[in-house]
Length: 270
Image (cartoon, rainbow, N blue to C red; front, top):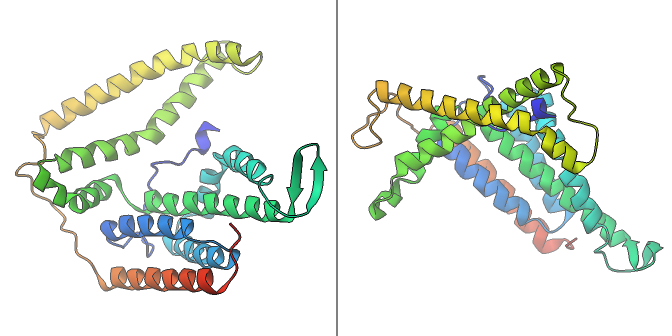
């Protein structure tokens, strides 16, 4: 399961999404998250889903990577669906005591599940197609107005990107430590919840030691390169919006128009 976590992984490529300005990608990600929560029927959600599928195809990233990102949260999706299936109104199609399942509840469960899947897919599309360096530059540029309030924008962007970058590294380290402990005879799967938590102690201690060691090595490397924060720093790459970026913004505007029309003229599900 740990090997299936794809958060923070970057897949180098030359796809359309790879060539976009990272600032535009972040803004469009936020926009599509808003779009997803502004859909109130299956037609509007279908428009949003079709746009996300188009982005996945244009990202030129193997679809199995997106499936891995969904595999990690499959339990959350199932629990959410199970909870929402009992919130429908109307005549029940199945009833057990005070619990009843209606057709509206089934529609609601499917609707919410598709929303969650769309959120994970569009978020994964950003991390798969944007390098940590580009993410740092984009976040810093977008947060630049906050400098008026004397907020250390560069440092905040750097911390966010480093945290995201080291997620797959720490997960890989966890998998290696667990494999090593199992090879020494450690039993991490049998027994109750308390026993499983206690069995994780030989994993957590080496993991924390490794994390602190990596943090120290990173700090030493940055200091050796004379890193002193964002004041006075120059950039090797300058971000510029291209016709491709304006075209993607126009595509997002068309998607928004489609969602608004579907919400106005078609009945709502929730």
